[in-house]
Length: 249
Image (cartoon, rainbow, N blue to C red):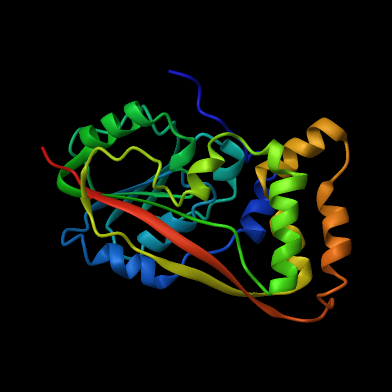
């Protein structure tokens, strides 16, 4: 088994500040599938965004990640236990969880051992929900600049796993009884500075900087600021996709 990738420790503080937050409708959809809410596992929790939301509804939350720096950004709550663990091999007991969630992280996993772990630690009839979000849209003019940046400038610096995001997770293996998925959108109001901060969280941008010693976002933002005024607030939309399944024993 190859070692899991950690592409986000370097920019952990940026990630917490600028990454979009998932819509309440996603959580409502998941909660409708889980009648028993004793314990949930948020796998690939990052800075704990999903774990904190689940903690409002579950007695206990276990939240894991391979990035210690990301976990250091996560809020401390009495019913959340954070652990530095890979998705593919945990120390949780068999049949522990009513719900297992993975937000914008499943494409990094080693799939076969991960699903084996899910089936081991999930209770009978527990729910696994993995989801992600695609490329943002703002206005046609801004979208064209971002699309060029995404595909042409930093396209070669994306890890191969990014293809699963571009395919809305349709390319991921999913060896569970599949249920209807959640589709929706993240909608937030941003300034141009918020967009700049967000682009700097991209793993491809960090890879470009590592290789060339300069930040490709700078030139992109020069073009974007020609069509987006500094003080102007615009609606930003990210499409959300998911795969949801039931664990059978």
